[in-house]
Amino acid sequence: MLQALKRNGRTTLAVLALAVASLATPAVAAEKVTVFAAASLKNALDAVNTAWEQQSGHAVTTSYAASSALAKQIEAGAPADIFISADLAWMDYVADKTLIRADSRSTLLGNRLVLVAPAADAKPIDIGQGFDLKARLAGGKLAMGAVDSVPAGKYGKAALEKLGVWKSVEKDVAGAENVRAALLLVSKGEAPLGIVYETDAAADPSVKIVGTFPETSHPPIVYPIAILAESKHPDAAAYLDFVRSPAAKPLFEVQGFTVLGK
Image (cartoon, rainbow, N blue to C red):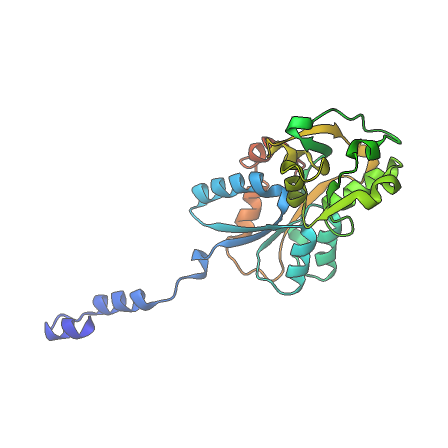
């Protein structure tokens, strides 16, 4: 292009600047904010992200998985800007390794733990001390997140232990890599019952809630959020503020989450 302009004797400083600009690499601000978020947040956070992009004009990309898997990825150096965990333990895990900005951390959301069944066979279950969960499984599997790592699985095991029924169903558990995978086992009819969050049940019309676990039977279900220590993205703080803002609140609430604030 410059050679052609030189032949015409019209090479100017302005044209040179235009040529240089066309060869420049994209600015960091043009890159997407990268969010690592618990799988149970997908529907709600997708809506929040769309609202953020429309308001700010900036893009965001989200990786959904079990909080345990995401925390391990962060520890291994995976590039991300924001982490939203489905429990305090995995946020504490990365915090203890100084992998988040401590001053950016807050508790964002709350949720409830429920028992679901395929919609075609959704008979109510009275969940209480010593309830006969084993009989309701009728030889089938109980779908849960992996009880040693996935937050929903840990909450579920804690609830069953508190209610005195864990030992009766322990060998019937089908552990899944995250809560949405457990939900899918019930949705497809591969498990007659599953323990998931209330918000997951609301996201899949193929399942129905047959019982809700007493909140006193397990630790409070909370979702902390924080900016990662290695994040250099100029929009990370603005995105975090938006997720915690009044504009995002109804988008979480319509999916069944309780917005807890800062």
